[in-house]
Length: 222
Image (tube, rainbow, N blue to C red; front, side, top):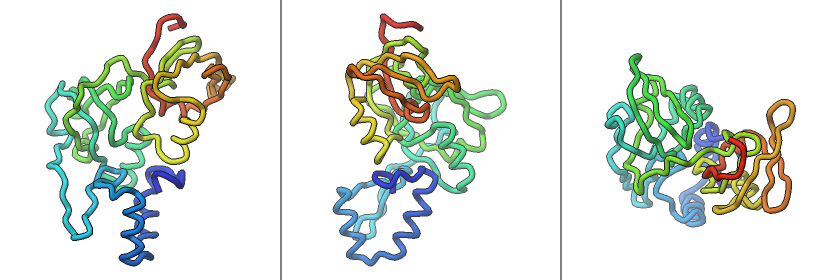
């Protein structure tokens, strides 16, 4: 569902559960083999082995994580679905590196994720589980969508949240590590924006540019 269908992240669990109810044991094993027998699902939950073992590292919630210590989001609780949808809309996803975690007076927490400052309500903190970040995160990384008109950037990587057909399309457009991008101009409504990439002008919607992590370069407007 995550890699090939293009379904939004908040629909993966429900759709997979419905489809899985129709498969027999052999079909489930064939699918696992085709996917390379992953240890975790796209939400970060451990997947049982064929023997029924369910092993995962102990989880530490954001509420318990030491302030200031860098981390990577390892798991997002996908139930209740209404809160999970809000977390997805806020840009959270497994694999996101976070820096500068600090508690706010109202009980919420703030951190910098993929170059953007994000505040998390107190009610979400026990639903977000963190892991130690190794290696340390690069503080210069930004989202392409946050770079100004006229700026020049170098692609660092595509966000771990970019999967399936969306990821394939961006790679086909040349958005691979090391590619230089210049943000040329935006439409009257702000999106899409036009980018000069490998000698070609390409339009990207904001939600696509959100998935491209870049390093700012000198020589363009800031």
